[in-house]
Length: 339
Image (cartoon, rainbow, N blue to C red; front, side, top):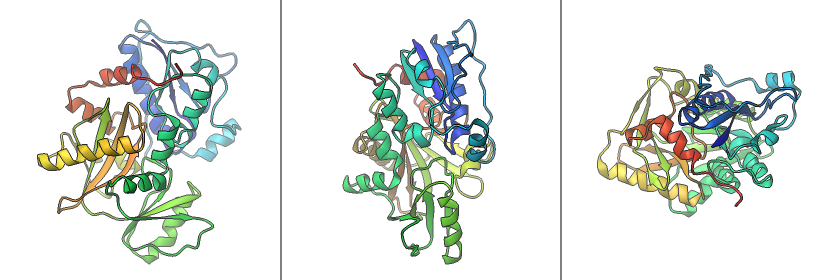
C-alpha cells in the first residue's frame, strides 16, 4: 500500500509523535509498503518533491525526544503558522491508500484531524472523530465511564472563569485534554494548589482535579477487539511524568504484569469495556491504578498510544507474540474511511 504517516503536529506531545512517526515509517517500509512521512504542522514546501520510500530505499528515520515538552510558542514564531494543518498535507494524504496517524495530543487526537480527513474522503488508522473527542476530553470520558459502571477516581472540572475553590487533598491536577503527563501536578496540600492551577492552565483553559489514588500503575492495550497483556509501570523516582516516560532507564516496565490472574482478567475486562463505551476503533490503550486492596480504577483512554522505543503498547504486543513491524502492519491494514 501507499501510506502517509502523519506525525509531529502542534501539541505538547509533538516530540513524542515525531519519534513514533519515525519508527512506524521504518517498520512499514520494512513490511513492503511505500511510505511518506509528513509533519502535519510544518507541511511540505511547494517546490519539495513528495517521495514514497520503498524497501529498496530503506528506512532510517529517527527522532530523539528531549527531557522536556517542546516550546510551541517558539515553533509558531518560526513558522508563522496559525492553523493545525500545514502546507500540502491534505494534498499528499489524498495520494495514499491510507494515512497512518502517529499524532499524539492536540488536534491529532481530539478528533479534529479525523474530521478533516473524513471531510476529504481520506482513509486513516485508529478511532473516528467521535471516539477521539470522547476519549481526549478527560471530563467527558470519565462521565461516560461512570455512567457505564467503570470505576474511575472522583474528580472536579475547573475553568479560569470558575471560582477556584480547593479540591480535597491529596489530588492530581491535569489539563483536561492533554497527554504524556504534560502539565500534570501532584498536589499534597493547599500551599501547592494555586501553583498547580497556574501550571495546568498554561496548557489549557480547562483542568481536572482528581482524587489521588495510591497504588500500582498499569496499562492494557486493546487490539482488534482483544485485550493485550497488562504492563506494570514503575518509575524509579517520582511519578510517571514526561521525563520518566521518554528517557531511557527512568522507569521499569514489566510485561506481562506480575499480578494474580483474577486481577489481570478484571483489568483486561475493564479495558475492553472502556474501549467500547467510548466508541473507539481498532486499537487503543487504557491506563489504570490498582490500590493495595485490589480495587482497580481507570484513569484514561489513549486513542493514538505512543509507538516510541519506550512506549507501552508495542511492549504489550510483543508479550502477545506480535513484533513491532507486525503491529504497525496490522494497524495499517485495519483502517477506517469513506466506502
